[in-house]
Length: 268
Length: 288
Image (cartoon, rainbow over all chains, first blue to last red; front, side):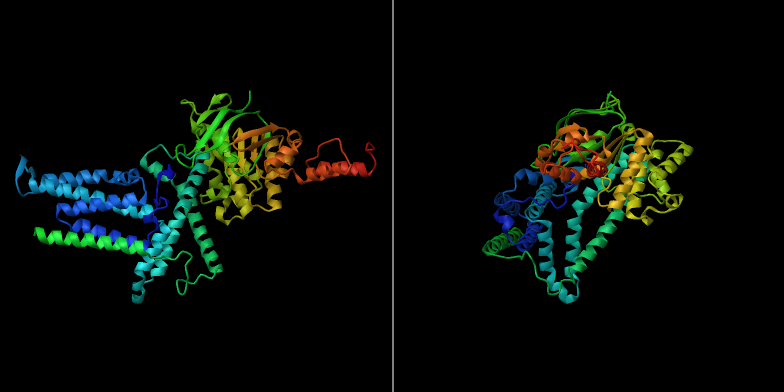
């Protein structure tokens, strides 16, 4: 049951997108998101769609995986789609019933919204599919490093994120072990009222918390033993390196972005 | 009738994914009541998986587990009742302690069985005594005990359910030699007193040779042999091929045999080996 939770859904492959500098990937993804929601013209959406398709093909991630990432938000899509479709007013009226009506503007907005949200999920999934969580936090640290001048503890935040990500699988494994052990002693986790089920969690949560604290203490000691003293003057095993492909990708994104702005001003 | 029986038992992890792995491969096995079985095998041989299947924590991919002749995965069988009859002590069981006092923690299993207060009290005190915990210890919080004491408290928690079959997955892992001997001798006494069936998973050949009446050797998801210790140790060649070493004392006696000092009997406990050597030195054993 606990194996189904995919946190950090990194999908290891050898592709251009995987090899790209994570910092560039983050910046490009951010630009992509802004572009999606800024673009008002139908061609802006088409551009976004094309970009997503090309990026997916370059990444060698099976398109099935991208579709899988959209699946959980289908209810949200239906909800926003219907809401926009039935509530918005403007343009030609196609259908009318009490306060509900379907209008030209409603159809347009709901289609735009659905496509935008799908592309948003697809694009961001592509980022997490092609970048391991550890590299991702490194890149965030690097991108936020100017904030160090404002006395923001950027390195410490990144280290905390890295540690948290590292220990999620460990804790999941630990939880299933404790669950099995308590089940062996006759703990009933599957039946009973809500209150009874909540109570049944106590024998699992307490050992889990105790072990999490124990691990934290051991980790802190181990880090001290290896003379960890924060980010000052620390070098990295995996250096983030940018190359030609990163600049090309960024230039492409900026071009698309500019095109969307031009399209926007033209339609106004 | 055997108390536990595995019929053509198979278990495969993560079917259909790239991580697919068969942990148990068509195992057939019969364990008689009252036996003290030592379970040995290399890391990844399927020991832990097999043990968890014995008490219904893992559902077989195919095949059956019979407890007293009844399939434990039959629709009519209550798996929780099975777990009360086949007690399983996991590796490092001290990490599952959670109650405020040791007493309450040992009582967790019996409470889940919905026993009367008096019966729970009797069982807690009896098993605490069996594992060498005093009245003082019972009142303490589990975290106030030492490592070895915690381990024994956790074992008592399973013993208190008075299972017909008690399975222990490496109960001595990470303990010092003194702690190991303590747990194992207490286990032996418990076995003698209650007459229950015990399955002891261990890495240590010395331990299983000393306490077990039967040995179950697993290798690469299959049962290699299920026999008495002397029967198993007689096949020293194939054991070493599986990465399992004979008990040190047996290796010493094999070495002596190579040098021409032969004994009739296979030796696998230090005590017996010492007796034989003493007899030989005193000249009471003139053959050879």
